Amino acid sequence: MAKQSAGQLFRDAVAQEKPLQVVGTINANHALLAKRAGYKAIYLSGGGVAAGSLGLPDLGISNLDDVLTDVRRITDVCDLPLLVDADTGFGASAFNIARTTKALIKFGAAAMHIEDQVGAKRCGHRPNKAIVTQEEMVDRIKAAVDARGDDSFVIMARTDALAVEGLQAAIDRAGAYIEAGADMLFPEAITELDMYKQFAQKTGVPILANITEFG
Image (cartoon, rainbow, N blue to C red):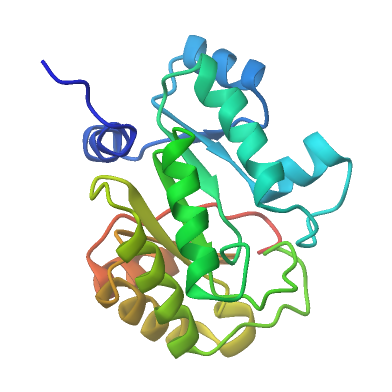
């Protein structure tokens, strides 16, 4: 039997465990502990790379190579499907986003999320965020989808629009992002549980939830 791709393992986990708990693992040891504890999928966040590997705040300081180093260390020792925070794609052009997508697949990631903040981004739970136009984010998603090669690799669209443009605008953006080819959705900094239902009704795809007490 052919070995399942990392992306397919992630999709299967999403389908089989509802809700799927994707636990944060900022290094290889954390990934192994997550597997021992019974988790079916793991997550490497941009904040985790910045703080855990660089000792820096989550302000868009880390680069693609920083992320790939941690991805490789995790996937070398742990076969759980890994979702990776790709920030805004690590570059302004479609070529940068394509390179990021291909590199993450090469290094064993199962999924990535890419967001609609401006290049000089900041942690999604911090104030004073700025986002690009819907059209620019659609282009980011299309660049990632076109580059992935492996159709099972998951492209997840993250929108930070709630804090900037309000709920309806964020929902409208979400619909456009799924139409552009994103497989799943990550509405960032949600403040009420019912909002997730509205995003799900609009898009019909799996939703990543990371609600906090402060939005």
